[in-house]
Image 1 (cartoon, rainbow, N blue to C red):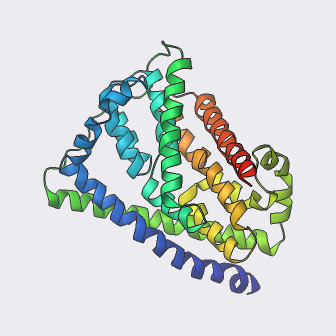
Image 2: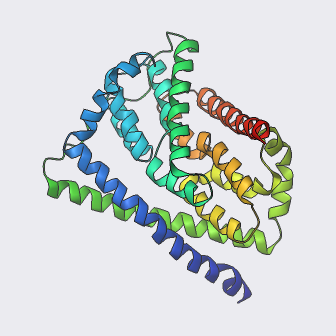
Length: 304
């Protein structure tokens, strides 16, 4: 009875509010992007990026992948990638750019709620993804082989009715997924909190946090961000800030770190399945996170 009353029921109540808040952001954004794609506006926008992509070692056609990634989770650009003829080198560059800059309307809105301005983190992620692309184009071997995926044809949507039907089906799947993940996270947090395991976990990764320039108080949220990402981990961060367990300075530094590197299980496995080297995508993101946080700390120290 105590388990249900003190752990399960509070997780249900908190998950309901959090899930509704996330869906109010995610579902309208996904519908808008689908409409933009249907009307050809995304293709038009991608045309302006063609000259830039030459310096990234990418064909101009991949601009649509990056544009889609900015607005949507990684599943959308992945669907486009598998319909293209690109080399493994190009895929590696594109994978890093998409991993750093994806689902920004949702994830930047969540990070804004935890202390980092929406446009600050959005500009940071887009600019860093371009910088990473430029550097990778200089250092990656010219001949890395071909991706392991087989080209597939994207399902063509020929009417607004068809588009709305596809959006409705995907929205139901997303709603169920979000509800399950958010509840699981809250249940996990309540269990860890009830058995006083959070301090032990945080203590165990303190040396790693120190290396990345993060305060020890962010340990649990760092773990959540790396396991499930910003969209779900951000909800827990807001709760911990309200409870005074993480201050605004710590949350801001963690936001900068997670903006570069988060959800390393799901995000990385998606691209590893296409043939991208885990060490390239994981190593580059961790290095980018280290540079961004320590760079911010150095600048703040000099200003103060």
